[in-house]
Image (cartoon, rainbow, N blue to C red; front, side, top):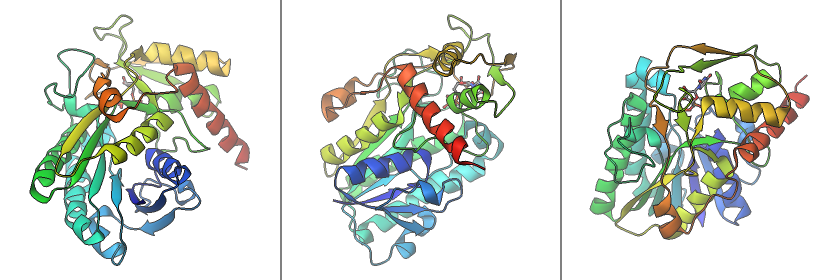
Length: 322
Ligand code: UDP
């Protein structure tokens, strides 16, 4: 297969591109490098520089069998501060990409959606038919694209899949998180352990959870990438399918910090601050549907493995810097 990966210079996209190449597929990446890194695009993948809005012109003359669409703005706090950016990048950008797909020959699309579409869940683990009531513009923008894909599958016969990731972490083949600024818990905690930042703030310890801190379902980036391969293989023309991707186990912020301390052998300087707007108390996935229909199951489920793989790559990268 010849596969287009939008956002393939980013953290998750680069791992998806790498796994596709290892699986023997041909890969082209479309990325504007606004947050991604050219050196994260795996060897063997072609990099086309541009926004998804311009996919039709940037990729004119190219043909693909399938696309994996990950290019997006993806920070909850930023989306609250600048909702128009999320509408433009995520919703309008996806619309333009869909308009270009026919001309590029693409009949299968796998989309990077998110647990944030569910907002504050009524019950956990969260199944795909749970109510979708996003509590921030990021989640709302991804939900809008999920809905766009359902309509497009019906209209044009596109085979469409939305993968709703829970908390992606870890690293694969030297590819780890490199966000600037970094906002995610696992890399921030690791940076504190490595002495790259002085301390970590826990955003709220008064949530209705066992230790008062937010509970999330952390999932290894390589397991997430594997689900994209399975989704490409199982997508059906004219249908839009939705799958939650998580391990089905929740860990609190304090439990993640403890895991980072165990893995790195270092104690972290931690303070407790106010809640971060837009953070639900508990997000844990039911991935029963993905297991059943895609034959997918996470193979790197332990928190130690996820944190350990991220640590290894961060440490190696630090060693390379002058
Ligand atoms: N978090 C925290 N301190 C930080 C970064 C994150 O306490 O410096 C918390 C955050 O409030 C959430 C969890 O860690 O409950 C995971 O946040 P992250 O930003 O990694 O992912 P999100 O859940 O927003 O996708």
